[in-house]
Image 1 (cartoon, rainbow, N blue to C red):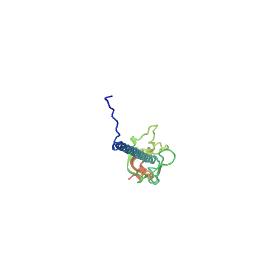
Image 2 (cartoon, one colour):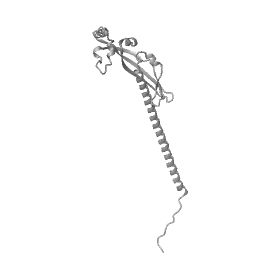
Image 3 (cartoon, one colour):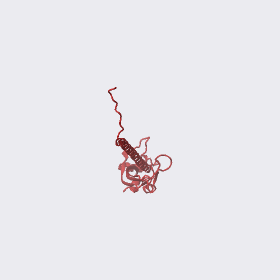
Image 4 (cartoon, one colour):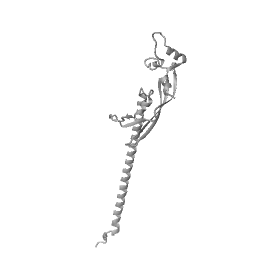
Length: 197
C-alpha cells in the first residue's frame, strides 16, 4: 500500500462564495462612477469650448460693426444717423446676419486738432491730403484759401478723436459684449468744429 494519501477537496463554506460577488459588485459600481465622471468631464469641457466660441464670435461681430461704422463716409458727418439703426453682422459668411450690434450711446467726437500744412501728405501716389489745401483758383494763379492756411500754418483739415461704444446682446446664446473703441478721423476743420465739443 501506498504511504501517500490524497486529501479530498472540501467545498468552500457558503459565506466564502458570496465574497467574490460582493467584490465584483464593488468593482462594477467603481467603474460606473468612473464612466459617469468621464462623461460629465467631457460635456463640461465641450460647454466651455462652445461658450468660448460664442464669445469670440460676439467679439468679432462687434469689431466688424465698429469697422463698418468708421469706414462709412457718413460717420463723421451724421453720427446720430449712423447709430440710429442696428448693424447686422454675418460672421459665418452664409449671407444671413448672425448678430445685431448697436452703437450705444451715439459716437461722440470729444476733441479735434487742426493739422499743420507741413504735416500733410501731398506727394503722389498718396495725394490723399490734397483736399486739405482747399480749392484752387487757376484764373488768378494764386489760391487765397491755400495762402491763408499756409500763413497760419494750419491746413483746412483736422484730426478728430471719437469714442465709439458698440454693444451686442444675443438672446439665443445669452452672450453680451460691449467694446469701447477710440478712433481718429481726418475731416475738414469746419466739420470738426461743428461735430466736436
